[in-house]
Structure formats: structure tokens, C-alpha cells
Length: 395
Image (cartoon, rainbow, N blue to C red; front, side, top):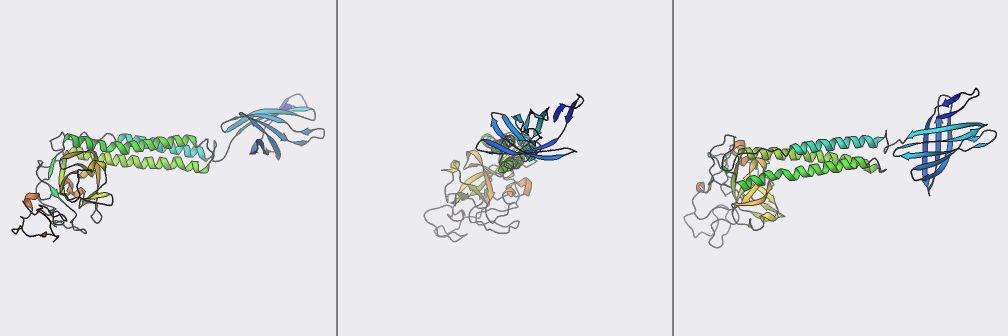
């Protein structure tokens, strides 16, 4: 905006749209100033210095027939805005120019950065809401009492058996899985009530994914704010990336909380008999696997039969040989087994029950036989279970 006294003593005000393009080199700022309105469109050279938050800009408006017009404007820099004024004399008339301009581009008001910032913050807020709601899992049934699913009375003595000798490949109902006695379907519930330590460990499962989702969401929100002050194109990607990851993690936490709540409502666990085998950093228990964890040290022994307490609905292991684990461990199907095999140990979802050790075939009459009757593996010592497939050899 330019103001000056006109020929008849009145104040004249002219308005221009302007575009100021600047570069800095060695402390000196230079560039061009384009000014246009309906009557003209001119480009001028400008230069100057920045001191603190003030840009002292000199413009070269050319020769007016008497003087070179090189006014200096004091422009205050405030974030993405620059405003201020200055004056010059043109043919005896003092002209005052006032600037009020706004930075444009990716990293400025009206650019892409505010849009990215807003979207990222919105993603972060949704992720926090979803993750926070994932913490409200069901209180579940009381210890020692079956849940509300309508399952039969628990029979703690029954066990499901599995082991490394399981036959990999397609499964048919009623087909024995290897030589260790895992069958389904068969009558009779294999459930037992959750103990109080098991319930606590199961409830704690939701804490880690929920905390991860909220942490990523907070990081995304912080980056969304900082992106307005960092002029790097890659900075625009980071808050969106962390916002999307936090939202995905939040929905995963909600999914985990739903499965845990369902398991707590049932209030039961299943004991699986297995012969663990340790390889490649994980425990192979036949139909499913466990990742290496310090809480399993000394609890699971390679080749030694063990009873593993599992909660199929939540895909978690809560204890080994009657010893509660400090934290519930995630179980996953072993390679070659269908994804639905692990949840199938829940009778409510698959009607699947495994015969306990009392249903296994009797041991061979010839106890001096030194090979497993199931897999043919040579036996050493007075063992009660085959070291390879886990078949019971002696009562």
C-alpha cells in the first residue's frame, strides 16, 4: 500500500499485490520485488540485511528525472509474516509504502506444511482415543469359575498333547496329529479356571501395545508442530508416517484388548502337553511356537515333556508346568500348520477337545524294546517318553 498527498491536497492510497523473492549469501539478502495492480506490473531489485527479527530492505525503483529512488523499508519478521513501512521522495512528493506480506510455499501459511500438520495431529488424536479405549477390557470371570460363555464345568486334570512329531500339512477332523495323542473333535471340555496370577498376566497384555500407540501418536503430534519451523521436504513425511503407524498400532491394541476381554469373560485356560524343541531362537512345541524369552529359561527344557497353559482366544501362554510366567507370551502357529490350529484349542470356537494321557494307547508289552513304537527312533536309558515325538512309553 502506498499513500501520498495528491495534487489537490487529498490523501491518495494505491494498493498493489506484491511478491518478494529473497536469497541470502554471506549475511547479505538480495532478490526481486514484483508489484502489480490493474494499471501496472513492475519488477524491482531489492537487497538488504537481517538484524534480529528485522529485515532492512532497500528497493531500486529507478530514476524519476531528478533522483534515484532507493527507499529503505524496515520490515519486522514474525513467523511466516513480514510487515513494516518506509518512505521515499518522488518529484518532491513523499510516498509512504506499507508492506503486509505472508510467506508462501510448502513450509508456510497457505502452503502444504499446515495441511500436513493438521492431518498428522488429527491422526494422532484418533490414535490416542482408539488406544485409550483399548484399555477397557472385560473384568472377566472370577478365579475358579467358568465364564459366561456357557462352557461346561472345567476338568483341570485333562490335557491336550502336542509335540515336534506332529504331521504337517492339511488336517482332517478326527485325525491324530503325530504320535503324541492330539485329536479333535472328541467329547469333553479340556478347560480349567484361570488362576489369579494368570488373570493378572493376561490383563497386562494390553498395556504394551496401548503405550506404544499413544507414544507414537504424541511423537507424531510434536513433529506436526515442528514441521512448520523446519524447511526440509522430508520433514513433511515424518509426522504423517508416525501418525499412520500410531493409528495402526492403536487398532492392533484394540484388537488385542478385545481378544483378552473375551478370554477373561470365559475365565478358563487349556493345558497343552508338549515336548519342546529349541531351534533358531524360538521354542517349537509342535502345533505352535514361542519366541525366546528370559522367563522361559529353566522352565522349558529341550526334549523334556512339559505342560503349557494356553489361552487360545488371546493366543497367549500363561504358564509352564504349573509355574505362572511373569508376563503372558504370544504363541503362533508352527510353519506348515493352518493359522486356525492354535485357536482351535478353544472348545467354544471349534468344539475341539484332546484326549488326555488316560486316553493314550497302553505302553507296549515288550518294555525291553529299544525303539519308539510310533516313530521308530532309538531309545536310550529308562525313558518314559520318546525324545523325538513325545509318545508315552511307560505308565
